[in-house]
Length: 309
Image (cartoon, rainbow, N blue to C red; front, side, top):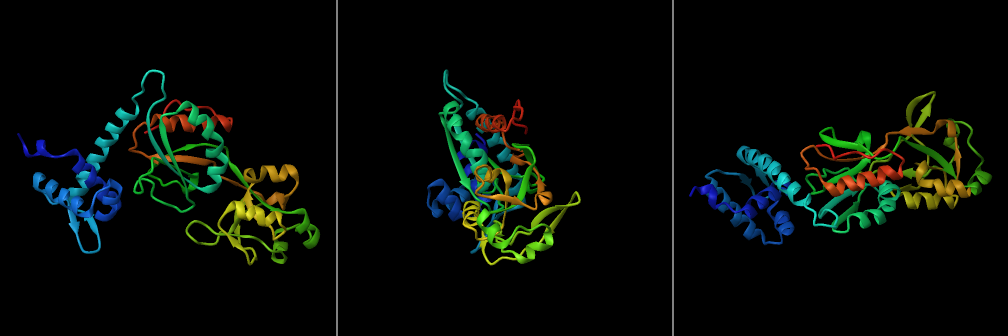
């Protein structure tokens, strides 16, 4: 029997968790073990392979060159194992498995929430976790199967599938605000108005992007209120606190009820479609395909035959 025959698959999964988390402690929490047990497992794995896989310091842990190579090969292997297991379907039931998504707030409201009832019906055995997060993150490093962002925010090494048509961003205000402060007729007049500032997930202030003669232009606008949440922004805008810059689809009800009104409509800006994206090395996840097609169907887009990899 070779040394490799005695290697425990659980130790290999622990090794991948350490590489992904960059920490024995975080990997231990994820695995439900103590840091001491995880450290012992890694010493056992290195002994049996006869190679150093991890560089350890008092502050951090990082893979060696041999460790990086092993992690890459193992990830491919575990992805194939995951594909085989999650593709299994008992007679009369949906495909089983788990699906973890990282989604920014507007996409959660517009795309995920409306699709949840039907997804639960057609995939009753799937454990779905949706984390609403506006921060730009590495979905692979943080253990997510997929994320949803605008197309231009999707990392280049990811596979991306559009879930919507191009989206439009508009400037809106309440009728009460416009009666009191007047309606701006050109962009320069925004300097005389209160504008609700938008805080991005990385804590930077967002410059409003507007269309000027067919070209996109970023502008700074005045305002003493800064908000990083769309729901709060819409509420403040309806209360007459200022002009807001929001996704038009997000305020469809308010526009229909005329509690908000678009201003400077000729300067509304078209944005990329919302995309769902995942690692190019991710296995073909049947529950992910179901969810993608449910959302695309609601958006009047054609279904896709498979999740590309």
